[in-house]
Length: 440
Image (cartoon, rainbow, N blue to C red; front, side, top):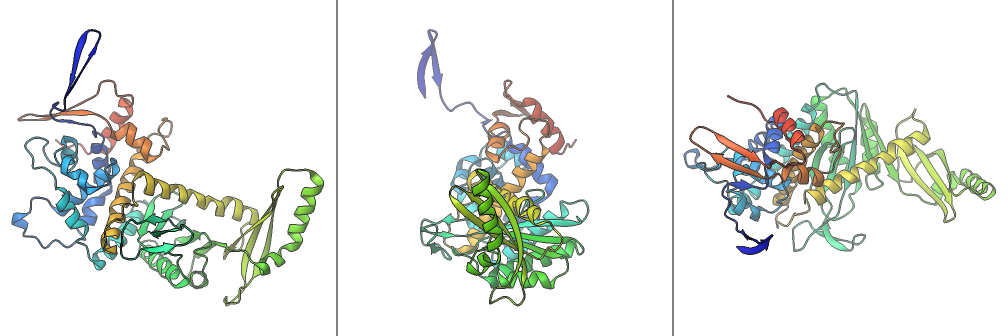
């Protein structure tokens, strides 16, 4: 408690306001979860060997509280020791705010984060892909999947962590897969802290494509990634499949530079004679590295400035696309995946992979990906004309989740009293009516 004075009136303050929550927007996330069927579907995959007669917290209850807390900015299970009594979180998890049992505590959360075995995690990954496919009303004609990884620094001796010379630290390099059209996070996979080799890239792509083919047998799939994923094994596998295309970055070398040397010289001469600050051009050639079984289409983008000549390459099995469009419009669009990874990693703290076991760390990635799905669903529900449309997760959290609410439970009803001066009250009301299922 503390005391102050304003206008000759004494001001006292204490944390004794009763059933008040600063996370009233958790109810919106609960509505999003109900619409997606996200938590219940994943909870049903994890084996639960407890006696049903003695269970206080179901698997769905445990996972739901954890995922909602992550989305609301509480990435650590320790936070649940206090949030387990929060009235908004209890309501979001289907429990009465006063008379209902408290949510699961941190030890229970941590125990079940470490519970899934490898088979369960594989099944959860399959369920994630299936749920993403089910989000489409009908199979799309074509999709583009962006593959990328990110450095996830470790602070102990976690299994699978390696020293990465480029990042100059011990880390994991988890794989992220995003649907380029919707920004949906299709899959996250924990990986060692090193660049993937060809066999690993091929294995990831093969498993993902085969799972998608169960739902969409005729959809054309394009895999897009930087030079880490432009491996011979991956390209050969895609070429052997029907309607699986790829566009990968390709590291430059002397042989490639020689193939486009005439075009580069012409651009350099044009820059010298035209006094332009930047001159850009595109060239196309066929190239076969010594390890490749055949030559492949390579597009080169050359940029000449006062700093010198910069040439970048991509390799693809797309045959009819214009080379300028292929590089400038299509390949460069994969930069959006890096922005989505930042949302996943920095605004949802998915780099909190501090468990020793890689299985537990993979489970944490699953939980943070579930939080990503809920936040993305909330963001897409905002009307396009509203100022919050297209906002980052941190903005949505500050404006729509961190909403104060007083909860009062009586014998016949539960009354939620939100702040009268909430700046986004109209939007909150609209989202609640559309996302929270109405009963009774």
